[in-house]
Length: 251
Ligand SMILES: Nc1ncnc2c1ncn2[C@@H]1O[C@H](COP(=O)(O)OP(=O)(O)OP(=O)(O)O)[C@@H](O)[C@H]1O
Image 1: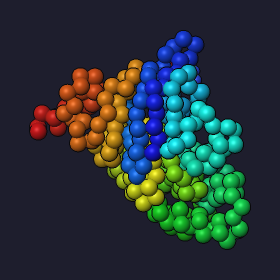
Image 2: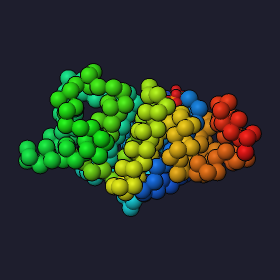
Image 3: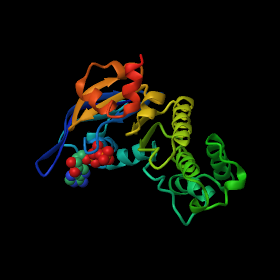
């Protein structure tokens, strides 16, 4: 579980996050949604400790990020998996090498142990052995995302962060990626936080959805509640997409 308590963050007097409190539960896909520029990325990076917050607390179970020593932060980093926009694979390293990278960096595993772990992770994202020696440029965007997810789970993380995991993917592949992230979240009981613009993802895997507007928490609920929230700003955001407006009318 990750608990965010009353956090605020400004850049040069520009207040980007305003007194946000939210709990992200373990074993669930927790989504953060909002318009471009609403503060989603700043929130995600603040929770990760990549930005220092001005006020508030961030708890990873019973550990307060704000008060952690460098050593404790380093340990926490090893418990976090990340999937960033565009997959962010190393172009000059093949599929197998990309997934092995965190094992080389952060563990004392033997060669055979690493091979076993790489296979385990790639099996879990349905990448078969024939693809192991291929380079990112030789595989599709959807496969790149799956490799990025395999790399993110290589160290068996407690926490998984995904920033726009579906960017650049077609709707069908996006659904596959969403379902994969949700299945892994359940199987490994991770606390997963996903930044997204994608309303299909919200409906598909939004077990908990935080909607932020201009840096403020505007609404929290589930995918089952979101079409009938009664919140005007949220409705404006969702029903800008005509398909969802029709869905609401057709209810
Ligand atoms: N490093 C920074 N320095 C100064 N201002 C920043 C910095 N990072 C973000 N901001 C500002 O914070 C605000 C929120 O940006 P953020 O990237 O969090 O939005 P977002 O909701 O993630 O948008 P998008 O969906 O387009 O990625 C913007 O006004 C942005 O200009």
